[in-house]
Length: 335
Image (cartoon, rainbow, N blue to C red):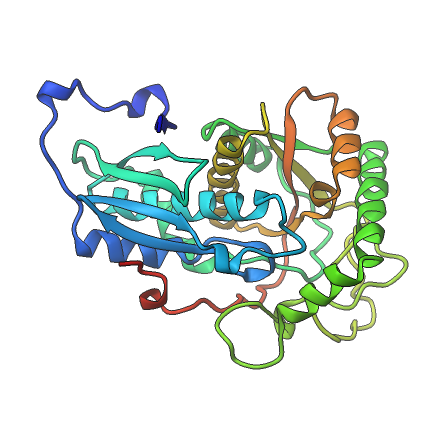
């Protein structure tokens, strides 16, 4: 099976005959897994496992945690495992043991991380790694203050550095058009009883270590909301706490839509989210227009892009939200 490297030119490994023979160990695996489990996943299903094999660290898809209704194609599990891969890369980099990344999109092994040349971590790697525990989806209303231009550019560059693109919607026309597409997709999904039953099954009112706790959901959707919100609980809305009328919306995409591209998109998504967190921004994911094929195609055409949208995001400033729980790292280590 051909392994496809996803490194930028500056990350290429040295010529083989000069490269030291290195192996990852149990300590590296544990650090990578602890970081990896903090990645986002649809309904916080956490569909990943981590394994040490022949001195390399592998990120595996967990088919038992693939959403049977919402993710029949495997798109969401590949994006989630891609995000976990990016976190694992950061964990290894800050240990001075950066990885060479090989993606395996047609196997259970999503990514294989092999040791590259040892070097000190960069300041950027340390900064992004430090905010991994603080990154979470914030589904509550944001404050109305705009995101400055320099932070917007930083977000765009974060996506580009991982071989993806980020379109930030500017102007009422673009935002209204997106809202119509996202709202239409949300209505399609709300009419799907199996989909809604699965969503309810991942909404938690207890202390389980997966799914979305009701406290981490936003206020219940109301007709005046511009963007669709998933209903993860019965939180009532405080007076005057409507969602922002002109949110900053970003569309993350990649040039093509093969399984390997979806893993790449997951890595770019996580770098984007960590960059937002490091910049003091909150974010929530809007996947409805990606989940419905007709809506996704309409979104792609509205952007005048030849590539394929992989996720939509709402970005802004807000009160700290409630992180969703994670399983203990011992539960995700595969033999």
